[in-house]
Image (cartoon, rainbow, N blue to C red; front, side, top):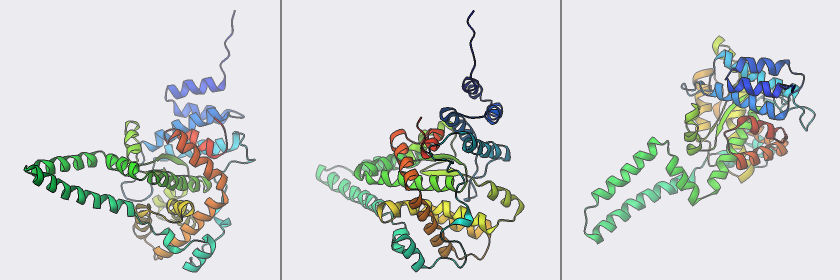
Length: 351
């Protein structure tokens, strides 16, 4: 008689196939230790579930249901406790807001930013110059169409109609086609987007905010729509349990405001660190401004808060250079779909 032994990993696989997330998490919590492979699988499953129903329609941070919030947070915490990382302790929530190199006391002057980051203030001001060249290229294409039509002796209207239809189709696709054209013309743009999102992802992880999903551009987000991802373009979806709870009570503390600010400005900080200047990040600045002026509704000096947050974000990225490089590597080689594998790679684990 042959006896088949079901391992906890096998049982976990069966529960995930049945989409019984609660039972999978319960098994996860009861286990004394968890393999990196199992941790990655359950994290991906729980993160996908929470990401599919997150709501960021108000322009602020994404909100998830309390049940899904607790599931994802518990998953990250259990992984930190039970997975044997190469470093002695996991990086999730390893940075305390009270231990920042630039605590928020009197804000952050331009001199402080430049001294601590060793970069000029201009490095943190998004300047999407290549996008402007793309629009200029569109104008040049129109002129070319007129010239071609004149030489060929034909009506240029059909050419204009075809161009308009192409642009409209691209808009329907969320700008995925024009993005791919831009990236073919300048491959560094794709690298910028990846390193920008890696900045958000790592800083959120360090500050204890569970990451739900990441998209490395419009096309990447488009391919995720089949899984009902909340992302509609390049972006990193995360949530802050304390922020969600405080928002419901109408009592948002300074620490919560500062943590969200640092994570939002981390993409700009990552570009400044890697390239000496940021091109992307205008949407991040707008999101922070909306959050501070509408959600928080305080008299916070927004430009000063943005400088302070960008400074701390860059310092965190610089202090965790190895983790950031691991994160960039896994995003380049494996893409953004498997958030569990991404987070395990960030922690230095091999899958």
